[in-house]
Image: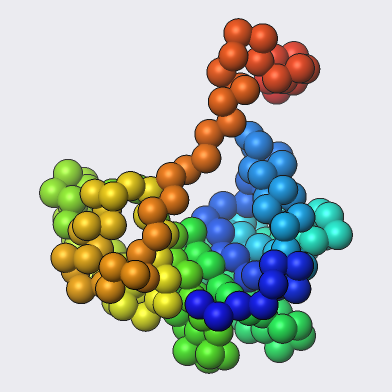
Length: 205
């Protein structure tokens, strides 16, 4: 992708959950760190309406837009409408989605509407996986087809290991469009002493 320097980059992310607002785990901390490396990170996050969450500017570089969706399938259209409003109001240089299915479909629609490059992430092993397909044959076979459709419309893809990249290449995705980026692990959390104050915080929840 041909993108501006990081300090000028505006990214639109479509996320699978609203943990960044509800405070679960280190999601907020990580996204504040990610956003600090670019001009602005706009995160559209699936969030059920019953939670009553609202758009929140978490830091100078990070804004989160909960979809307040009434149904899980309705999230796709909600994300598209919110993303379209963002793209009309501010320059967006790249769209990134957290999976090749629901968030990927919303991202593909936004790419088609606004001509913005699309980056699709995949943190697991779904495509043609017989165990995954057997879990829910009808639903997951539909997702298998949808994901392939989304990947063919992505400008770049992210997978977490070389085996998954090889699978993408066999599916016809050009090798140069698939990047292997393992999920980062904060190793300091697993040292005997841990992160100062974290044990007390976890016990209090």
